[in-house]
Image (cartoon, rainbow, N blue to C red):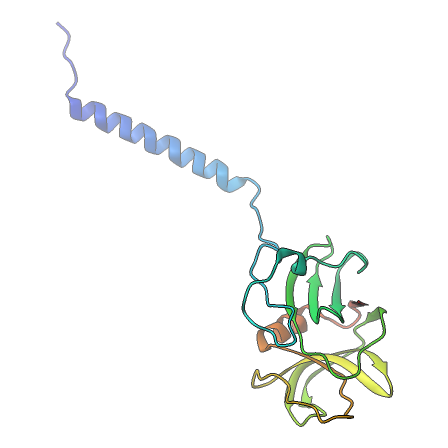
Length: 187
């Protein structure tokens, strides 16, 4: 008569076998293609005049069709929104901004000067200043307030050309917007 293994041996054998199969599948899955979240899939700031943390419709986070191709900063005047777009035309980040009273004309520009920090024309300490255009005798630049605040109300008739953003967005733009980076201004 042949001896029958105890039930514990069968359970242990099956458990060890199952763990080995799961481990092998996990190793193979780790070697595969990993999905990356796009800016459209992440919550983004509202396109209102005041940036907020509330999610928006996915269509507002899509890079505008008329914004060119390749690695670039896209600035929508009407949407008060900026996109940081990589070389494969995928948006890496998008956020809303507070534009100044003087806006750049539509078109293609390049980051020509970067400045760590200064005082803005409104008296606010600003940092991460990225200049890319000029109009009406004013230099137009992206920046953020050092203290993270939104710009103060501007007196009627005052011309300002700074495009302000939240502190975290300013840091991201500073890292992305090296001298020579394309800037495309769209409607």
